[in-house]
Length: 250
Image (cartoon, rainbow, N blue to C red):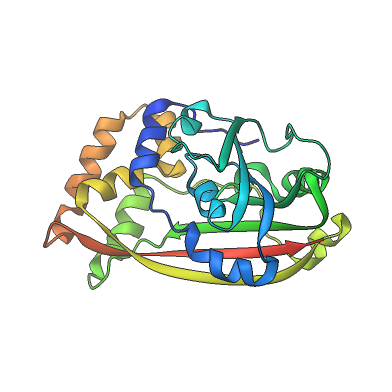
């Protein structure tokens, strides 16, 4: 597995506070395919954002993550059972779940490792639900912000190479899966300058650069707030977020 930047409590708290909950936007179309389900597993659940979304359409959700710090931020819910585990070695018997989901975590594990273990714990006729969400680096009605995002933010905190997580019929067929659907969503999210800065510090490119250079979190946060200040003409600004879903069936 890739370096996990989400093992400490401070990062987990910021993640829980600043990450927008977009995963529920996918539920309507998911249900059109699957109908009501009994048991689902959320792999790489983090602070529980994707698990809470699945709990809206599944009777019982089990959610796993290797970081106890992230799990500790999960909101207690009778329909969600949290557990510390890695995606490559899930602590469940074969055929335990109707659906296995992964939200914004496939790139940490890799497609093959995730799908191999998902295949093991799925029941016959099971589903795999892969969700990604992202910040596009734009601010509604302020085009100059996108220039800063590219030439300021990403120059200081460049994106890191990730594991191959592309999913096609050709690279999942050997495990018995086929793609049933792909779709995308978009939602506007209002943020203050402070919340935006906090959100950006939860991104792995920032965490990686802080680790590499020794820059402190306080320094990074102060720099981000000062940098975005000119683009805020009010207390809140609107930022478009996007998301994509892939639904596999076996």
